Length: 173
Figure 1 (tube, rainbow, N blue to C red):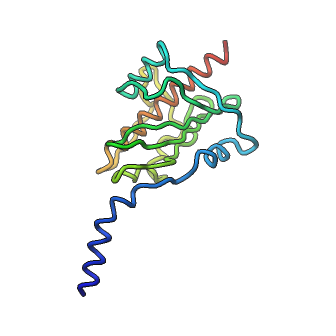
Figure 2: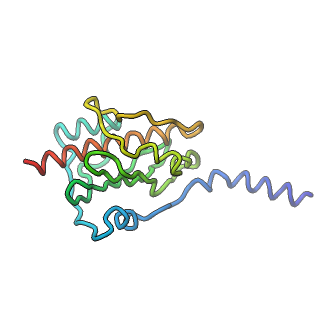
């Protein structure tokens, strides 16, 4: 009986640690996004208006001056990080024709809130676009106990869509 109680206490103590993990590598994510061949990485600079808009979306200055992306025609893939509560969450986002076709949590480093990695949550972003006010064109339901993780993923979805707009405008000119 004492062993069972100790075992249960150990499980409860370890539960927050189980939330952390790498769920998919960047290479595997890109291979799924571009099954034929992964395009060469390109960069977009977060300077001037683009940097100011990125800061407004994130609600803080971006921690980088440039962001890598991969694109082939009207399909692009972005691997972005945002702080949940205290640690970065790494998310891969695929955009087709200006809409999110896939959003996947690649790495989660927080002790809580990892429910955002499951398809019941990430599938809400499918076919989401960006409105002129830089908000998503659909509401994303939250998860009780994962508010900051949910907020981080919403910001990253908006940022990826905005950066894709900038990339498309640049490629068109």
